[in-house]
Amino acid sequence: MRCCEVRGRVCVAEEIAFLVSRGIPVMGHVGLMPQHFNQLGGYKCQGKTDSSRQHIKDGAKAVCEAGAFCVVLECVSASLAAELTQELPVPTIGIGASNACDGQILVIDDMLGQSSRYPKFVKRFADLEQTIKDAVVDYVREVKCGEFPGDLRNASTGSCNALTIEFDATGCCGYEPHYGSK
Ligand SMILES: Nc1nc(=O)c2c([nH]1)NC[C@@H]1CN(c3ccc(C(=O)N[C@@H](CCC(=O)O)C(=O)O)cc3)CN21
Ligand SMILES: CC(C)C(=O)C(=O)O
Image (cartoon, rainbow, N blue to C red; front, side, top):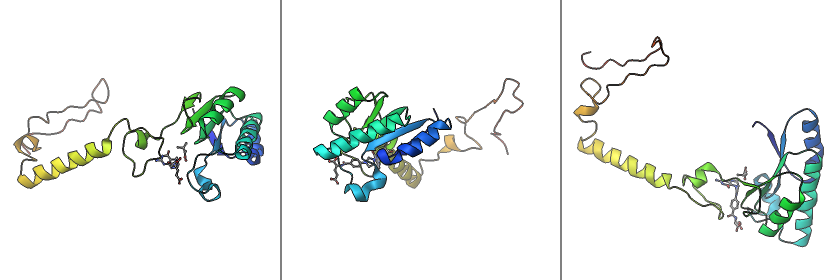
């Protein structure tokens, strides 16, 4: 789905209502907003005090009243996420905000293990960084010792490259590499 995400609380309700009135679906976003890193004092869990908790709740409600179709909760406490998920009329999508939310976000580079820094809530479901490093180290080693490219990987003699790609049923756009003699 194509939509627009608007980050902020009560102060962005007017902008959300404007976009929604023109037919643009808007996703709200409360809690940690990385764009407000300086005002928030870092990438910290939000809603720890009663007043900031209330502030986030008021904001999330205003965002819904303005017409957002869902609200992202970023790094809010589990109990606040549970309350908002109960109280808001639209689905909540959490990131670092517990499993109380209706849906979840995880940055793809984080879950695949390809980021340079990891927020503490991330689970790495794969370690692509290590996989890529291992592949590159193997490649460099094989090039240095002459193992790659061997005869089999040589375009003019190789047999394993006997590849034909046809882009449509008639083959008129087919790509047929020329192997063998030049
Ligand atoms: N790759 C990536 N993944 C993300 O999820 C992400 C970004 N980048 N960039 C923008 C924000 C920043 N995010 C973060 C980053 C770190 C924490 C984190 O671990 N915070 C610590 C406290 C850090 C502090 O005190 O300064 C915590 O205990 O919650 C949380 C959210 C989430 N977002
Ligand atoms: C939802 C998260 C990943 C995000 O967009 C951000 O923190 O900037």
